[in-house]
Length: 221
Image (cartoon, rainbow, N blue to C red; front, side, top):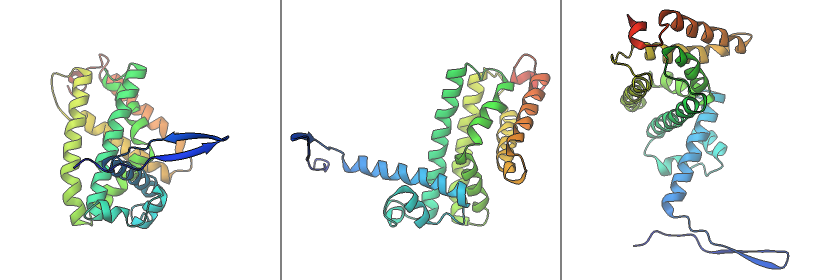
């Protein structure tokens, strides 16, 4: 059976007919709704915290019906796990664009600044909120932990490939990622959030001094 399509719509402007053929399939509409829900979840969780970001708040932010989440996902935990995966996809794209546009990423000392730019965004804060919430939600934890493990492995592999590492030790990139995530959250508890940049710069400087060549092997000694 062919995919359902939306009907043709006709609009009249200045006495002339303009025919707009709208041929979005059901699959396309579903994908658009899911993407809107993911983006709304990030915005709502980063603003209100995990406990404050109810399904209703997220649906209102997305501009969809309040039953949309339960319609598209079996449980709230399943939805939130997909939010984490979606955020990772957005972060991968952001990492790649920064490296491509600025010609950076081949030195280990590049990574604190790159990671800060990506992980300090609202999406990064939202993911941290989700991680903390999963500690008291067994269903969410059972979905988040394997997803996070797969994400970490994929991110580490991309890091090793970019810097040309011959030793695939995840300690350095793990240090960068979790230090940056902590600093992103820590901004909420200091008077001048912008001053956290100095800590990022210090981590960059430490990496540069420990590895003048920029190689991972020199850094981990």
